[in-house]
Image 1 (spheres, rainbow, N blue to C red):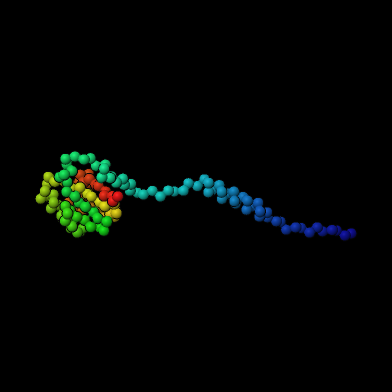
Image 2 (cartoon, one colour):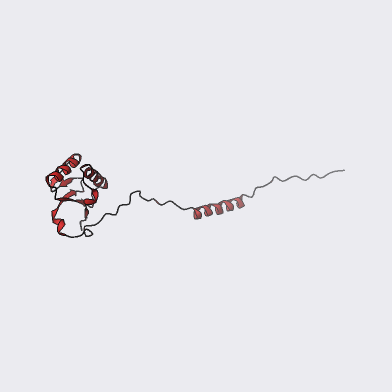
Length: 138
């Protein structure tokens, strides 16, 4: 008696259906993922010169101007940044009734503005009393 032995087939993994499942999972994860938007930590709304009220007080303000090139001038005189705090303190002792106004050029670096505010704080000035005007060239 002869027995017929059937050859066993090797089990095949259906790769085509696995690719379809992976594609569906990939689409699902892409659609459901919320992408993190890049928000800045410091939100700065710089006022324009037209937003500052016009009054009789504007004539008594001495400009503290910031230029595009990083220059700082107090009332028309150039002041080095490292001695700005001393110059501001001297200004407040010599002219206590006059107030300062920060005038920054549109191209002035923001880091320079922060250094000027820091120097004003070290000189004993309140930042709230130092209005800011951005000079825009049109």
